[in-house]
Image (cartoon, rainbow, N blue to C red):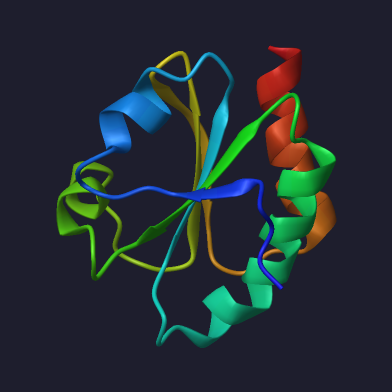
Length: 111
């Protein structure tokens, strides 16, 4: 079940939801046909709930939002990117365990 704390970002709302966010943003770039994306999705939902007051968590479907994907040079999915103060803070490509994704988020909160 998808978390209510995950927002769906697209080419139209990217600037307002991500670049202008007062919180750091974890973006999960994925697609409906991507097997590893389905493995990561429940972890992203759990982290969105756990970090809801400290992080914004967003999903971008690369097929539906090609401009956002192109802007970040997405070549493989899933790709997770942390945006902090409107800039790319860190990223990882491929399916990763929850602890590794949480560590990515924690680094953004501590710096």
